[in-house]
Length: 379
Image 1 (cartoon, rainbow, N blue to C red):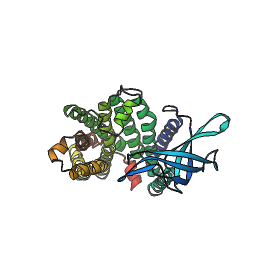
Image 2: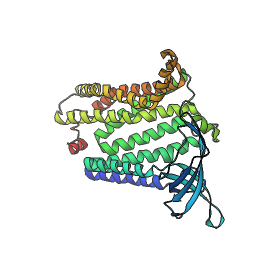
Image 3: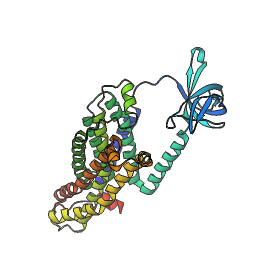
Image 4: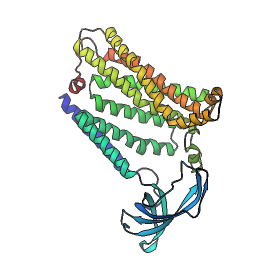
């Protein structure tokens, strides 16, 4: 009965994911035709070199390799703005993503090189990840795969459009996180006491992270423009967006995965302990959960620190190279924002351990003889 119930729930989550995938979202595109093209020749006569920076433009001759215009040879120009993070410099034989503008009669009137073509490599990595997940995880891996895809679709089809529409960033982010919290935990843990324990602990941990991030963001006067492309977003016609609230919402969105992970670890451990020794009192069971939480907390908080610090290594290197004093460096909005990001997530992690332990002590009552189906299957 439990197995049938969980398969029905898996089918429901798959159906929801498919509906979101085909659900139209976002703004209409520019009408161009995107295709893969090969660079047949690159004329660099108009390119000016300034140290490692290049400005000017390249004259390219391309052969279209995909779509209805495959085989067509076209000319294009690639502008170089002198920004390494935005410019793409092409050489003969490179594959690029190009946008074709088609006029009356179906004739190509303009070609815009976008960047090097990376989609093939990305699809190979996605296929490798999905394949390994299914091979090593079996049915649990399939559930994890559904939760992974659902998370990505929720972010792209629900979170981003809602934020662009001007909805309250905190409410939208918290709502999306709670939907993902429910979906991911019950998909992986199953519709049982294990899933309920993890869900309750993760919910309280995410709520704590949200409150801490909100208080810290206001106290330290961070305006949210420290994130890449935030200012460009305002100039693109979204001047009414609250970058500060979007920044705070992103804090507990980013840490929610680690919170769910820790809650599931503690809930699964408590489920196993309760299954082996049904005579344990709620207090003793809560103590077991707390001891497991202490063992995992050290590595989990370090994981958050490494994950966030890896994203701004270049910033720290640039400041150290210019001999910026530590007090000045820590006071800059870029570094301060990452510190708030890390510490808010870490505080949420610290609180999720006692929250999950307390929830588990209530849910796994001494006389309940809890059925730990998910743990038994994993073993």
